[in-house]
Amino acid sequence: MKAGFIGTGSMGSILIEAFIHSGAFNPEQIIAGNRTIHKVEMLAERYPGLQVARSNKEVVQESDLIFLCVKPSEFKKVIDEIKEDVLPSQFVVSITSPVLIKHLEGLLPAKISKVIPSITNYVLSGATLCIHGNRMQPEDKEWLENLFAHISSPISVSENYTRISSDLSSCGPAFLANFLQSFIDAAVEATGISNEEATLLASEMTLGTGKLLTTGGFNPISLQKRVSVPGGITEEGLRILEEELAGVFSRVIIATHAKYEEDLEKAEHRFTLKQ
Ligand SMILES: NC(=O)c1ccc[n+]([C@@H]2O[C@H](COP(=O)([O-])OP(=O)(O)OC[C@H]3O[C@@H](n4cnc5c(N)ncnc54)[C@H](OP(=O)(O)O)[C@@H]3O)[C@@H](O)[C@H]2O)c1
Image (cartoon, rainbow, N blue to C red; front, top):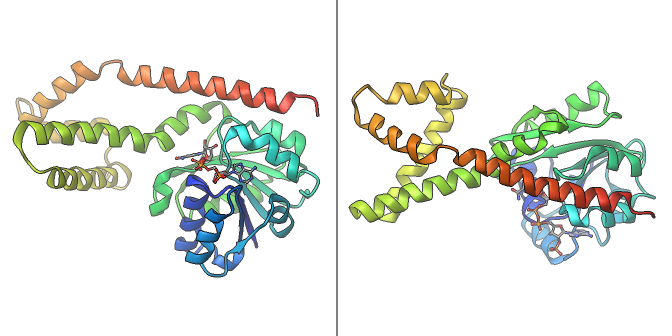
């Protein structure tokens, strides 16, 4: 099995590194291409054996499984470049939410899936959202999800829920980090605790909370109940959070969905333009 990557920016390189670190692929099983070739050359230096492709066509010709890791605006260009070389026996995985599977299936004869990763996959953690196209047979889905299980918890989602699922899983780390930074900044300002110490405490707390919510038998509601005894200090803090954060996440979701609709429209336009 040879895996090819088109685009080795932030997410393409995270996937390559996570697959290698997890043992899912040896560097020799990977071929990668990128518009700015220097990025792939750096990966090949770090992972001897990884093959640097000189074109996107070369990636396709050498691979059984092809990951498309470019931004939505670059998709159509890449598809036009590779479509003559893609075979029905190959697997193509797109990691981009606003490019719909129907568009990819319309242009490429391969078995198509959309798998939305998360930066958390870099530490072999977090979810990957799996949305499979019509040509993916049950055994193909199982095989692909088993591959992603090396670096994540693969979760099947409907394409209708791609955006909200990505908000939670892929944007979530940034949202949570933003919340934590506000907490840390306030702690430093109010008490003089060092930024370093507050950051360490907040990070350890986040790791432990993640474990409680995944393997520790808690959900977000039961965890709040468990930590806050009636009349206690946590309850005071939660009261303020509930007053101040009311409606914030509804606004966040409205904003992410509005941007998604914009991206969807642009992607749709690019894919339906006459050849
Ligand atoms: N970032 C996340 O946390 C995240 C999570 C889930 C999904 N995604 C999705 O992943 C996709 C990629 O995001 P990203 O954050 O990795 O973006 P990025 O860092 O900008 O990487 C995109 C890469 O694609 C390369 N590229 C552009 N056009 C190309 C072409 N014609 N042929 C070959 N390579 C080309 C770019 O090369 P250059 O070096 O020349 O710019 C760049 O390295 C996006 O659609 C995003 O929605 C991202």
